[in-house]
Image 1 (cartoon, rainbow, N blue to C red):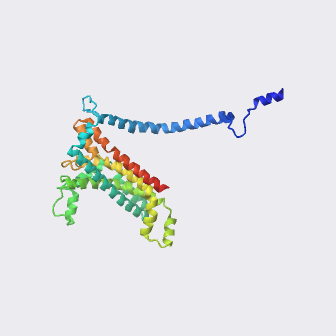
Image 2: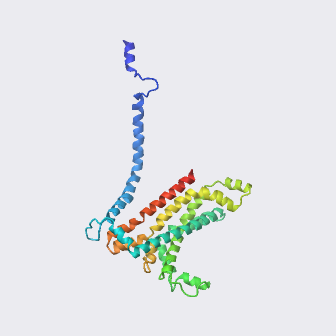
Image 3: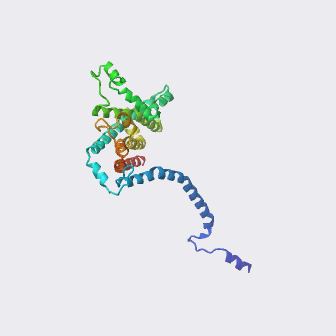
Length: 317
């Protein structure tokens, strides 16, 4: 009987087939790890949902209505978008935003990379230089832009006085009252403020490149230009893609610099999506069109993000 009882308690399984006898031991551990992972991800998911997803879908709903301040809006479909595209001010805002973003990001990329190369070669006061370079990016934007507003003053501004003393100009430049010079002014301030972020980010990427690669290339007879084009640029491409993508998103949605300096003027020559959306949605109380303006750039940013991620992934393979 003892032998029969032992045979009855041993689970029988065919060779090569999975047996569930180990499942009670492994399943609770797997479930515990899964729950721990979900708990770790939950705060970030709630943050993204509360600060990104909900405002986005709420603004999307407002853009499809005729909502105004104090008035219940009605569903109008895509009429807000079609009305905006037929307006001259909005078309000029699109051109201004593309020009502002393209020129500012290009200059920040080139100057930031050059500054990072100089900082990498600096041997004296390296830490102090890195801290000083970060000051334009650390100072609150409104405070720094007010300083630039004083510098660009056509009568007593330091910029015109310095250019006059150097003999570069014969008459004062109307920095903030002329459409062309106003755009130059806001682009200059954006470059000045974003350059430290580019320089420090590129410097972090340059430091991660092994020096042995440059030494081996120099032994093979490669010059500085060849080392830069064959070693620095390819290995820095992932960092370059992320930084440029981040800068495009932040530059095209810039508000403080333009609003403090020019408020979108003169003659709507410096309006960007953020400033025009503010003027339309809050100043003019047309909340539906203001939401439509703020969402109009979303497909462009999504396409840019997709292309940048493709480039970055291709560089890391």
